[in-house]
Length: 247
Image (cartoon, rainbow, N blue to C red; front, side, top):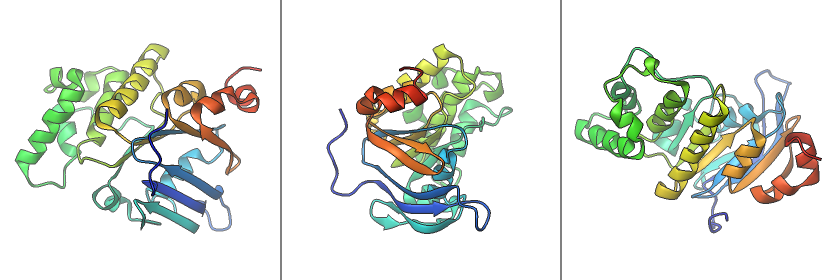
């Protein structure tokens, strides 16, 4: 069941056209919403433009037309260095982003590197470690010595340090075994229940991504082709045939 509709979506992507090279648009008029307390999943084939949507929201690729609104404020083409501090949007990238030689504790500290209030930083680390007991147990361990799944938990935990309003997760299951993938999705659902974490994720594992989410969007060739409650997309014959390995 999706959270109750908010009068204003937390994230509202309106008719956004964006791309890396002038004259070559990757996404072509995307409309997408994320309401407070929702998990929303974007699925689609490789090259559909899913990651470009994230980069457009985060200011990493120029938006040529349309708007990106966060809580009603226009953040179109925001400076990526200000996305977290100004808009409250954190990102968990697809590629491993933990610093292997640094400890778990030090990696978490980096999530608030702009904060000079050490007491506040310690309090947030304690909060994150309460959510992730494994991180608490490994606080003094080098991040690079942990398993891939544990490092993914660290990356998610670090994204929560600055108390974001929205977390963008790019392929949270990438490179993980099926068992660890299930654990990561369980973690995302648990965070949504515990702290009402709002998440927009891209996921190649379409079935598990939608099963984790309240609503979903299907992208193909830079366009949204289907959207709606995740349960409806899971039951949609076209979506099932194209992305879920079912007929």
